Image (cartoon, rainbow, N blue to C red):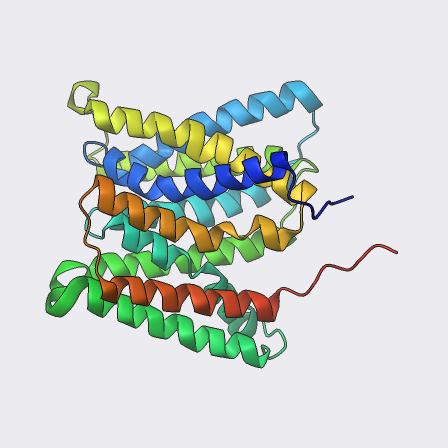
Length: 305
């Protein structure tokens, strides 16, 4: 039975998800300074996935079917290669704080996909207002963060970032119908293994068929990669899975509102990324739109009688 009380364990798990997932954008920014984006993600997800998979295997001794590998593999391809891979690639030109804000529009894209492509019922009025508000905020963000040179500076990066967010959203919806193990942690570890291997393959192909020589990897990139493996993947996902079991899904998913704030502050403090009233206003508009969408699409969970 889920408990809505803010107990110390729930608060600790929320803080972990809020902070660690909010820091992954800056972590990826540092990691790709000397590591190609797809190779970096391949190493991150393969190592993290292998650790989580081994833990779940020893703990559960599960029987995994080919269909489950196929389902989790497709989710990993959409979300970790197409989604996170595109985000990491775009961070070569787009500041980490802007990447975090655009990724926060996932609920917006999910609402669009459900309505336009999956032919679900017409969204509630509040959802439509949220969609329009969110898109307006994205336009504001492009204008205020890039200025007149938006097309020259962040143009392609923002396009890739937007498409990656769309793929992540599509993967999220697909995961609901995909064949998957009973253990959520095992399913996520399978997604990481497949997504990590796909990222490695793409990264090696983009790097002329070879990995990056160890001597060329800076200490900051190596530390950032280790941080992403341990805290961004293992601790972050484990905390989120635990929250889904113990609390209401709406509370567990509230990280979407907090992560951009963490990323904006850290990008400004540690990476010297641009911060002005225009970008802050755009961020507020986007997050307000996301809140409206969630209020309109997430209905209260049925109370057990």
